[in-house]
Image (tube, rainbow, N blue to C red; front, side, top):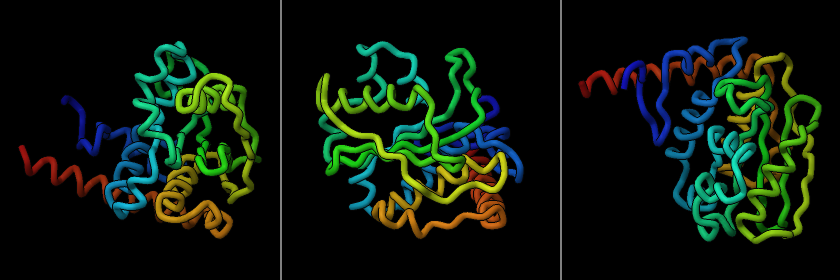
Length: 215
């Protein structure tokens, strides 16, 4: 495919996606999806089977699709029940702007407590579409009118205007491998995230070189 550096899982990664890992840049949806595909592939089997990621492209669709179309983007509800769902949310409100938005957050479904936990690295506020996404996911799994709660969680806060996507990636990394209680121990400063950005660029270059060798 023209312009694609490499493919991981269902995600095609382009040069602009890798460049978005440079310090001070806002991560693209593909950049976040690439990182999460990579983290998932490295996750131990039991943890991987108990978690399900709703990637940015599907979350965007859930904001604007009809109720009848929800199964297209979430799949079989029986495959989601009893799992922890990690839902990647941007603040984009324009269905015609694919790369729109200015902020990434994480919505986590915890099936045992029938609760969504919302993580925001800037002040812990959510926009009007977060309850809509939560309702669509819960009712897809358990039926219309199902009762659940949304709990805003306190967590590590970003120190600049561009690291929200990196916070989401590291939150997901922790939740893929540990329990929600471990989030309170997660401390992410700008220097730490700058090093992690460099690491993702290096991983991207390695995967790009592997792809070139196939040609």
